[in-house]
Length: 140
Image (cartoon, rainbow, N blue to C red; front, side):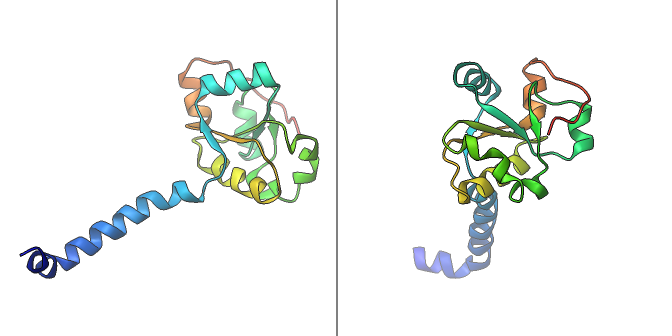
């Protein structure tokens, strides 16, 4: 009986499996530990974590976490040497929603950075939590 069900519904089962894999795949490709705004604040205040904003410069200028450095995702690997002093220190990567910063964590992980954190929900989550934002400037 179970085998008969599988044979009759093979296409539906295949679609369900493929859909499940597609949902999980993006989270598997991200690096770093996902943290919420409260955890990020604690890391910044207690362990002097460096915040790296991987959005483009024009996005960064609209508003960013206080003290964040702007290194766009497409430049991150090439500019990783600027962060060598932080290889064993906490780094928090931030973008608009947490997707690009997750990709940035994966890039830096491959380059030997040990304590990577991805702000889950990105700048949107930070603002929603009512935390301060800094406007303008190009802190590189």
